[in-house]
Length: 174
Image (tube, rainbow, N blue to C red; front, top):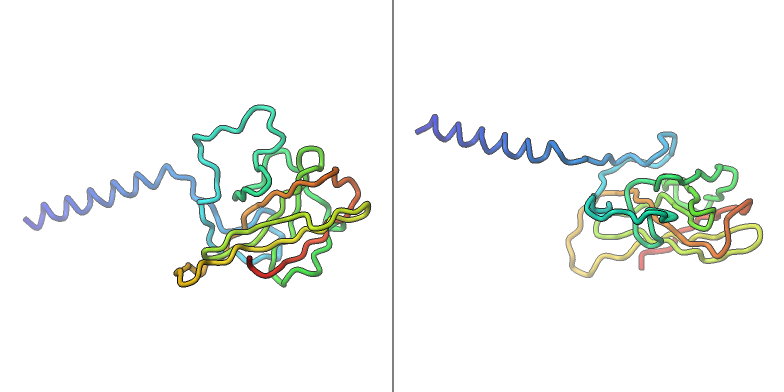
């Protein structure tokens, strides 16, 4: 009887291990290893489903308002000299990319627990674009994990970024 229990137990462990082996396990490290942002766990809930194909000719695989774990292919990094992140807290990611001819900003944000990162182009002038980064607030009485994730969020611009500076700021959770 003890032998049967061991065989069943080992079989269950092997079944779980093989089911997990085929999954793509994301890392908690933001893209661009030289970032000053801390590492943390990453939720896969924001990643697109493999069964949802990206339409051909789509300017970006990351529509504004939908966070994801990776930077869309074809995105171009914004030089550090063109990013003003002085208003961000210490340890907050400072990574920005452009896509779709510069009309989409892909920004590495920070979220945690039950919150979700949000981004909005608060101001667009001839020399700078102010992006307000925030996080949704957890529902009252809801239990949340204490993890930190670094999704990439997209913000649409009225005109291409070109030589304008990206000013990043945060506001309290909404």
